[in-house]
Length: 480
Image (tube, rainbow, N blue to C red; front, side, top):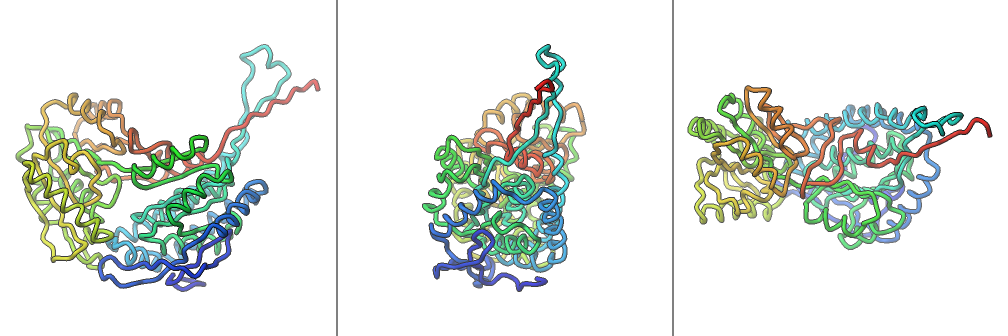
């Protein structure tokens, strides 16, 4: 990178300063098993310093124009360092090259969107004319930073999902202690270094690898005012219970349904659904998982999805055209294979698989039908390259069934009818409903989050900023 080498050794960033305790965590390439670098493991003394700096920075933040300039400068640096960030992301996560590039490009846009959201902090007038007591009173309100944020970032999007916490917090005036994922720490440390290069006030930023026990101790500290967590439902809801009086935003898992109506473009549906379900080995919380096809077109949709599955390029993520690379580790890959095996044992049938060489971290893209609804493959998040296929008769009945599901993040419906799409939008109790595209699609300025066990609160730059700020009213009586 300009000004810095690609991260191979990252010290903890404690209120803008790099330091190390002497204990290190190695990070490697999921495809080659090559060690690509290491990061420092932090201790309580570092956390205490970070929190003390954060609380002081919250009370005396840099002016908003300075924070906006830092966000713009961060976006410029990301554009300058695009190739290096893309390479690091691909090597550390096994993300196919085009998807890695896409994440870095979104990373840049996220900081630009943040810089444009500063007007959310403007004074807003209050109309008091409806009440006789308002005579002679001028009212206004403004949003204020709610305080230091502890942010947890997952391994699958260690740059842009970190940015969805860091960028709005920077504009809001909320210092952040970012807990990196132990499965992909170097990317998040690289982003932390870049933000300091961009001029983010040092006291506003700490980036650390923490043990689970230490992370919980930090979270419960009174100096942390907001939890922003992206990860598993089990961990997210457990952390929320630990901090009942703090602000909390949880972006958790899903098992996104795809609904296929009789008037759908089946070829387009199959191509987009296969890409959604299998790309990046399904390690996306809004990847397609359960495909529901109307019985009138089930046979044709079945054939189209089988063909799309078999055609999915799988293997080395560096190879042109590969969309499904390795899972993050062998345990994750085996978990996917076990869930498929358990479903088949209980009556499910494998329809199609993609061809790929044997690799301990590969799970081949697999299409499965007739999966029992109590099987984990159907009712839990697979987080792997699997699609289940189920026929239905009534859209209304299907939507009622989906609304009873525990995970409700994104849902897709393929239909030529805008009226039917609008019915799905108003009926499905999901965080987002996608018409004629895959559930994986997300824009960085949209409200993003789930219902049920899939989350609490919303991300998306502007909406995360609202989660991290609190409105405060001001009344002036003119006769005093």
